[in-house]
Image (cartoon, rainbow, N blue to C red; front, side, top):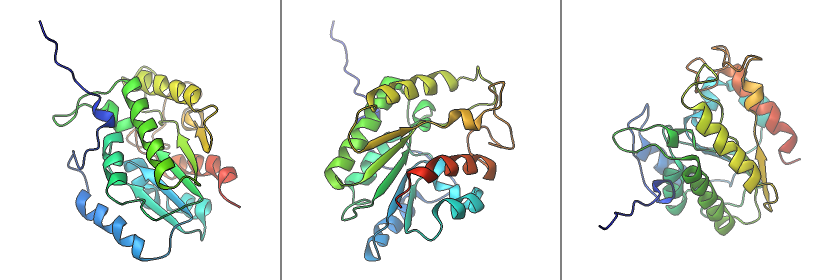
Length: 225
């Protein structure tokens, strides 16, 4: 009996999958339009957590980046495969940022009609594929790979275990990777009992100003001088 082969969707470049609070294609076009202006010093790439930082954490955004030239390439509901598609379709072309901050993977654990649940090993492969694209497109950039933020109010929430496994795999795999730093700030987003406070993440996924402040403080020592 033959067995059908099911490839890892996390490594297959894919455009928009989910409906969200914005026009995905319009945002992609807006990113491409940025290339007509000055090149950014710092590029942030990710999902809605990155996308919403200037809106939901404006004070920490200003305190973290100040007057630096920063391009926010966060797209709500994106998974690793969406980032791969965007990189393959010009979003980083011609730029040589000093720093790239990648925060992606949490949505790969969310199953919908358009995308199944991905295992931590599959998400790791997706993130490694993104890093390979960075090396091709802008080999001189330092890349900070963020550990996926904890998700769900309680320590036994469904998302906690796969996120923890992915972060452990990332820490091990990236420990000696040239030009890459792994940064995991989960402890700064959790209460002592392991819960997430609504003051840090009102929906237990997306940071508030308080949550973004924790991210900004962790990034600050790694920003270019």
